Structures are given as C-alpha cells and as structure tokens.
Image (cartoon, rainbow, N blue to C red; front, side, top):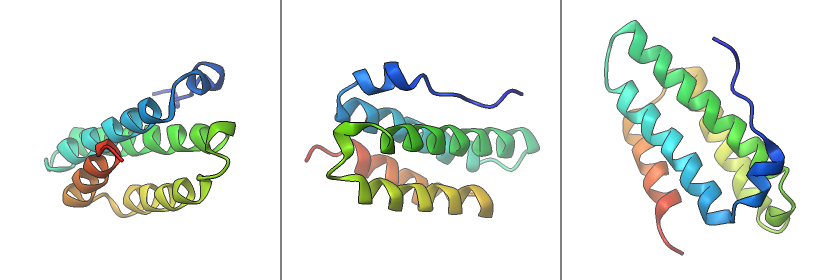
Length: 103
C-alpha cells in the first residue's frame, strides 16, 4: 500500500475547524478498527493513525495555525504514541470527540 500524502495547497484552503474534523475522522476510524482483533483491523488502525499524523503535519505547516501550533505538536505526539503502541480505542474516541467539540 502506498503512503498517504496530503495535498498541502488544498489542505491550507480549508478553515481550521474543517481540518480538525478531518483529523478527528481518522482518530474515529482508528478507534473503530482498533476495537477488532484481526490482522486486517490492526492494519486499518495503523493506516488511520498514519493518515492522522500526515494531516497533523500538514496542519502544523499551515500558517493559519501559527499562534496555536503547540497543541498540534502535542496531538502529533499522542497520535505517534498510539501508532507505536498499537492504539487505544477509548483514547482515540476521546481525542476525536474533543477535536469535534465546538470551542
């Protein structure tokens, strides 16, 4: 499977709340896939975390996040930790819900 790549020009055209919703969707996908035990589900979970990390990286590079970038670095650390350790459905669901919460 080829690695996920973000079209950064298109990504930067999205408002911040849409970017967060897309990242939240990947955490949700990881949570649902991680609830299963099959090899295929574990691969789907890893893929969702990979996409979340790629989207977070593209968001960090987006100038509209210049003032709020620290939260994105912390979010990336959490996503990378979940990826390496095999994920945690409850944590992924919580992060996804928090990203979707209106501020």
